[in-house]
Structures are given as structure tokens and as C-alpha cells.
Length: 78
Image (cartoon, rainbow, N blue to C red; front, side, top):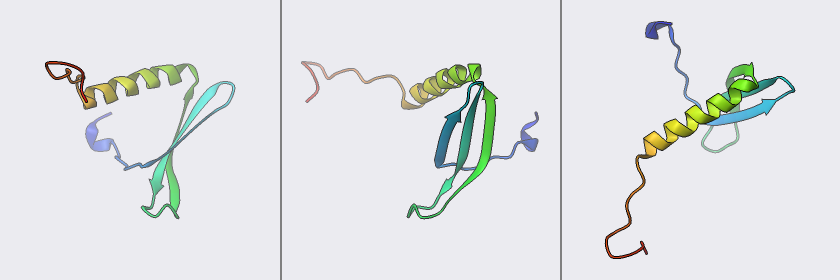
């Protein structure tokens, strides 16, 4: 799919559910005061793909956070 056809949505609300065969991922928004929330996107995929998503997300977060810092010379960090 060409990027101009992709629709980006901001999400700060996440819910995950499952049944015997599928994983269900809900994405939405919640107000800063937490009083109003709305799910705007639901992704349903085969349960077998949940593991792949977990691995991809773990890799993305690790890359975002960067390599672990080396402890300072002369001992363990305080």
C-alpha cells in the first residue's frame, strides 16, 4: 500500500483480547483526565501472529531505547 493511502491515528489507549483462534487489538484515545475514552481501531489477527507482533514490538522498543549504558568506570552505578 502506498503511504499516501495510509491513515495515521494517535493512540494512548490499548486493549488486547483473544478467543480460541484470534487475537483482538483495540486502539483508541483517552482524555488526559481519564473520564472519556473511545476505541477507534480494532485489529483482529490469527492467534499465531500474536507472537510475531510481540517480537516485533519488543525489538522496536529496544531499538528506540538504544543500547544499554555501560556502568561507570570504577564500579557499579549508585
